[in-house]
Structure formats: C-alpha cells, structure tokens
Image (cartoon, rainbow, N blue to C red; front, top):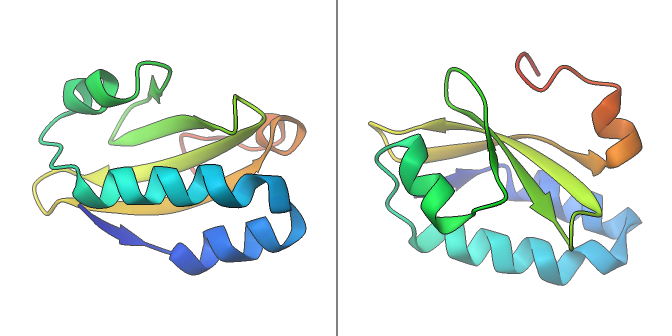
Length: 97
C-alpha cells in the first residue's frame, strides 16, 4: 500500500513521543500490506473499526491514540485523515474528516 501523509504522523509524534514507535510499526505494516477489501484490513488489524466509504479507525499505542484513514482499495492507497488522542477523536466525525 502507498501511504499518504507520513508528515502528519511525524508532526503528531513530535508532540507525543510515546507514539513514535507504534506509529512507525503501523506505517511499516501498512506499507507492506496489499489490502483489497475492508475484511483484509480487519484480518490484519482485528481491533480496527471499519466505517463506511473506505474509512478505518486504527487503535495506536495500546489504544492510547486513534488514527483515521481513508483507503482507496483499487489504487492501494492509504490516506491518513486524522491522528489524535481519544479526547480529540471524540470531537471529530471520523466518517467525514
């Protein structure tokens, strides 16, 4: 998969250093994935929440942080739409961000 917005992750872990290693591990895993459907994402990340229209919520750092991605399955592209704490996540609409 091609991942868009690594810079978003870097900016986040600059303020939350404990997120750096889990985000790098997530990035590495996603980079080598070849997801063709939401069920394949769920098979890789059992705790991921599958939303509508290609949106997926990943739990990062033992569920301390949440990452919302939009996945374009035909083109194998993952767009990071949001990364934040649970409190920040509760203030957004993951389906439309």
